[in-house]
Length: 88
Image (tube, rainbow, N blue to C red; front, side, top):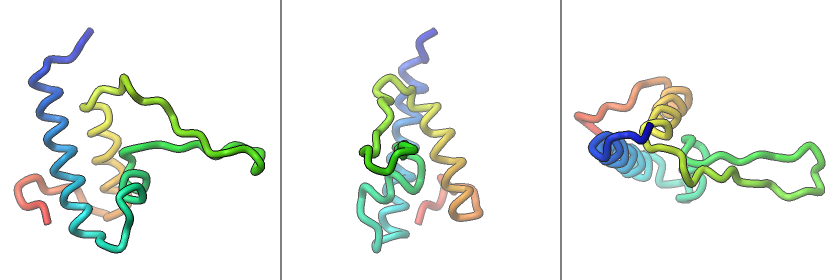
């Protein structure tokens, strides 16, 4: 079942708010480092170190699922929940 466009929009806007706050909180990190460290993107390291790292194709990942992952990773890294009322 396809999610409601309103739910998609709300999740997308929350993800942008988190990303903006993280960019401000961690100015020493590069953009791609923020994306990876906080779960916006995933990478897989192959068992064979001679092979390249592969990125997972998440083109069809719904924003609400990505939001759940990012919120969980944010909490794991910062030891706090993201405050949507007072983003830093």
